[in-house]
Amino acid sequence: MRLHRNLVFAVIDSLRDIFNEGVYADKAVETALRRDKRWGARDRKFVAETIYEIVRWKRLYAEIANVKEPFSRQDLWRLFSVWCVLRGIQLPDWNQIEPTPTRRIKGKFDELSKIRKFRESIPDWIDNIGVAELGEAAWTKEIASLNKQAEVILRTNTLNTTKEQLQKKLKTEGIDTEFIQGYPDALKLVERANVFKTESFKKGLFEVQDASSQLVADYLQVAPGMKVVDTCAGAGGKTLHLASLMQNKGQIVAMDIYESKLKKLKVRARRNNVHNIDTKVIDSTKPIKKLYNKADRVLIDAPCSGLGVIRRNPDSKWKLQPEFLDNIRNVQQDVLQNYSKMVKPGGKLVYATCSVLPSENQDQIKTFLASESGKGFTFVSDKKVLSSVSGFDGFYMALLEKTN
Image (cartoon, rainbow, N blue to C red; front, side):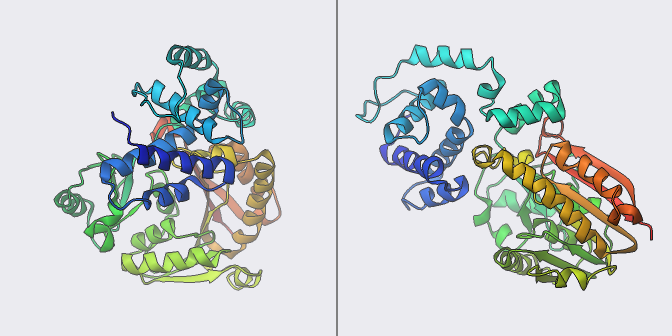
């Protein structure tokens, strides 16, 4: 592979923004890809994937390069040099690149690869909590899986097409896909591509949604005509899936504390041809209280550590702090206690997270069921989705029924 100066400079600038300025990796990549309209698909792929790779392996590369944060520009070039050497890419004779001890880099890599926190490039505290909650063997497998690049998975919008028709249509647009056994609406891209530019996307024939995430709406057991509340709807990936499963019939109340996210949901709903969604901003306790005992189904896609989705958000490993985890567990319980009151007798509730930690999942359900608010509920079932088993994101979902 021959390296091009303008592409590598885009990578270095983006890494500086992510590591030193706290910019989210996906936003930094978006900005980088707008730098030069002349870049082709291969150039854009190089820039995006190299940024994500170096972000993913930051701790390992920094240890090999013997550099510490905040990274100077020269430090970032050293990280890039390590990336090149480990991938067998010939380093160009540029003045930014120091003479690089290739053998020392490979030797250090072999040595550090024996230690999980370096091999998997994670902070000590995340490694410790993973072992404490999942056990040594399960955590070792799980974190290795969570460090793999996430595949691109589509969810067919069954209001507008079928999975088979969508596959054929995408093929005419130059995108090959495969079915995934056990995921009725999912298509997996054979090769990464920018699907948002396709005619199929513009016509609302699909959404990009990981296979594990596609299990959640299904778990709620909705039917056409029901009143369903999605309490932490965000930009609405699962809300739109619920609308498909309900065949656009009945009512979905999509709630969130962020109005900006609900605005994005409205745009997506129009493109998807969905018209049974009402959005409500949670700006006080009033919108919640108005729905007490009214909903056939309630989905709580709770805020969480996001440890199950670090394949697609590798920078979250570095942004996440132990205090956040302690705080979010309190928020999760609080949300369960309050939002569960919207379920009517005989109705059902799903609590879901994109975390693999039992303290955010099974433990929260046990605490809730033992509380005053949880006394009217019975546990029906739960599903623990480990990335190392499914090959997709790590998720958890629990189904509860309100008996009185």
